[in-house]
Amino acid sequence: MENASSVKEFILLGLSENQGVQKICFVMFLFFYMITVAGNLLIVITVISSQCLNSPMYFFLCYLAFLDICYSSITAPKMIADFLVENKTISFVGCIAQLFGVHFFVCTEFFILTVMAYDRYVAICRPLHYTTLMTRRVCGRMVIGSWVGGFVHSIVQTLLTSQLPFCGPNKIDHYFCDVHPLLQLACTDTYTVGIIVVANSGMITLSCFVILVMSYVVILVSLKSQISEGWHKALSTCGSHITVVILCFGPCTFIYIRPSSNLSEDKSVAVFYTVIIPMLNPLIYTLRNKEVKSAMRKLWSRKVGSENGK
Image (cartoon, rainbow, N blue to C red; front, side, top):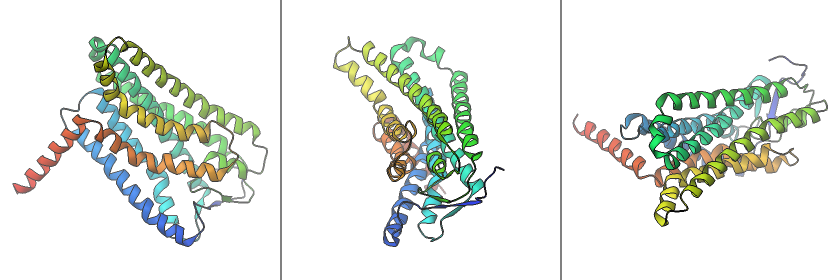
């Protein structure tokens, strides 16, 4: 990727320069990453192998778990490895690739969460038309649309950033390459690019969030005539999804919908959505979902049974 930069590599300052803190962080974040991969992989395997989890909700959940593995794997392994080395460098091409990957998978996850909200709206508010509206072909097109939307968003952010000239310094006050830290290093006026970047992220974040809020407002309004049973149905069906939406949209809105002024705050918040949330998502969906827990127990029973039969 050619541009007018004299900088060929960047130095990531990471979360801390204290050696003792870095060793503690290495153990802690390695554990978090292992839990993230194992938990989300378990959901993917469970949904694919279980015949009782063949509804659109679990089809989308499978992709959500896959995206959690992907975007945590873009940042976490590099961050974990950097805790053990003194020279935390990343090439210019590697930096731009990391930026693209983070925005691609995070934005795609936003779209998948929005699609899941629409799925819950149809299931609760239009149950008689659910099987007609949410066919496997329609669900597949929604997933493809989410991937395409994530790609378009990410390619815009990446092209705008990669074409900026970087003449030095080359130290990024972050643990991965992101738009705002790179804008601060560019040796040119980045005001216009910064506005476009914030507008791009803000438009997607706000539009997805508005659709999500409208979906759940309609769901709750449609159930207001019912007594506690209706509210319980809405909360039990949508509770996990609402929790994940709040956890995802909160940090990303804080970082990307405003011009960045404090990178130390940004990277602390970024840890939450790149490491913590992908780890929590499997727990949120399995602890609140009896069908997923039942399918996991059956999967485990089959595995144990097959091993005992050998």
